[in-house]
Image (cartoon, rainbow, N blue to C red; front, side, top):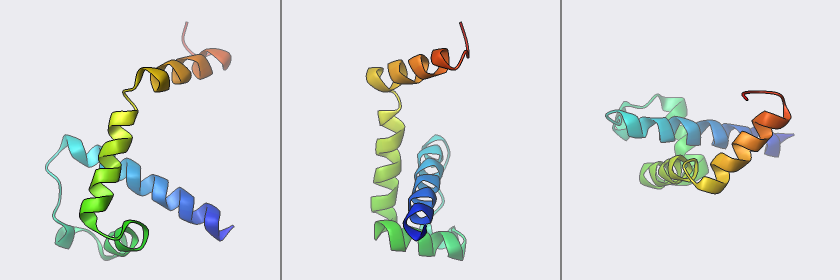
Length: 80
């Protein structure tokens, strides 16, 4: 259960960091204390966390990822 919570929080942080690529990124010292602690615990450094977020963002644009998302949506009756 603890491992699942860790994975979920890591995923949340990665999405947050990926979205930060679209705006001026906050310096580490301006992040909330809880966010700073999570970044340090899960990624080691803010730079490493930002790199992982960037990788997630770029992976979403891959043809295979987009194809899989479209097929999954179609199987659930979404879109046409």
